[in-house]
Image (tube, rainbow, N blue to C red; front, side):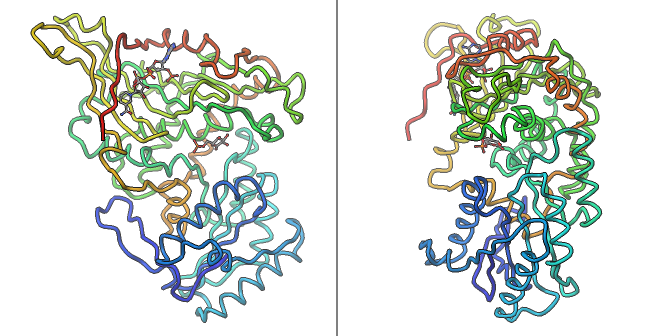
Length: 479
Ligand SMILES: NC(=O)C1=CN([C@@H]2O[C@H](COP(=O)(O)OP(=O)(O)OC[C@H]3O[C@@H](n4cnc5c(N)ncnc54)[C@H](OP(=O)(O)O)[C@@H]3O)[C@@H](O)[C@H]2O)C=CC1
Ligand SMILES: O=C1O[C@H](COP(=O)(O)O)[C@@H](O)[C@H](O)[C@H]1O
């Protein structure tokens, strides 16, 4: 899929500048976006809708999907032979010539919406057949999706194979959670607010939960899911990336490398996972999927405590919880503070201060805190300082994560992509646990679909020190 000749006007997201910068993406050469795996689930659900939205925003009267479709060309071919890739290169070159783009200024973005097993051969073919010249600012970039490997060894092997063909600056390892509004907000909240600076540490924070819940099961993805399971699907990547942003030290600057340096340090400080701090679950009915073996040991739910061995976080449990086919669909970060020393109000009975960031649905952040019960009595009640995005930013459309990340790729901004050493450190944490699950040493507990997951997970939460608020009732503000 390509565009050129001054057609695409897109907004450059200069990460933290307040004023959006209008940039014509074709000003430095023709841009071609090649989606490999165009007929797959990911391309259908995420990649093409994101591309369409970007296109729609950039072209004033292009609400019509047919205009968008006219920009596309479909090339069919096999992933491991040169023939198809030579044809692809020819088509891209013809398009670039048609747009009169100077040789050496063209930009080619290859989005691999493919299973990781074919990444190496596809990258080899791109390198062999589809590279462009870069002497006038042109580039070739590769976007790869998760799962990037299955464990430390396979991920490192994959990294080496791709690393032999492309430089790190050309490889964009996408984790779409890094493109979510509230995840991107974490750096601002933590480092642009004096309020949080002195509080964000083991002296004040008792525990942190990072939770992903889905209210549907694997829905026809049994073949993929059973091979990977919930830890590889969600925890090792999405939730761990969120943990990094919650726990990392302040980066030297907003430069991609500075941010990723700090994330790597957090990951390297995570202690080995203890068996007694893991609860695995598998929903009842999971094995009914035709592609799931009858005796599958794959977890569809996991609650895992990670402990960070450093000055800021020693002793603070980070509870990472993810599950499919549960009672609700949500993703949030819940930071629970310690009790007030020498409490004269008996607030402890009601609950602790909590700072909650809800990533989805309906982005919000709220601080649960004790206030005086309105009225004559001098008693306390749990209430909240509430920033609900729909109310506060009424009418503002929050872009989809994939839209942002595709745009970042076009702009060469790697801040929200996973660096090779980061990936290695992430696999380091989970590989021993995953291997034990793979060989059946650890078994998931069965739970009912539409439930909260295994009761053992809530027990683990209590053991970790989490204290649930009692009698708290949220009254949504009226618009
Ligand atoms: N701006 C907004 O939209 C706001 C919305 N609210 C809403 O108010 C409600 C209450 O909010 P809040 O107190 O923060 O969150 P919840 O009551 O949803 O959850 C608080 C904690 O208790 C756990 N929990 C929930 N149910 C059970 C259970 N039956 N047994 C054991 N543990 C349980 C949750 O685990 P887990 O995370 O795994 O479910 C979580 O750790 C929510 O629906 C929230 O969305 C509140 C404030 C602002
Ligand atoms: O990467 C994945 O994410 C989705 C959930 O994404 P979200 O943006 O809707 O929260 C999940 O359903 C899928 O299993 C997983 O592969």
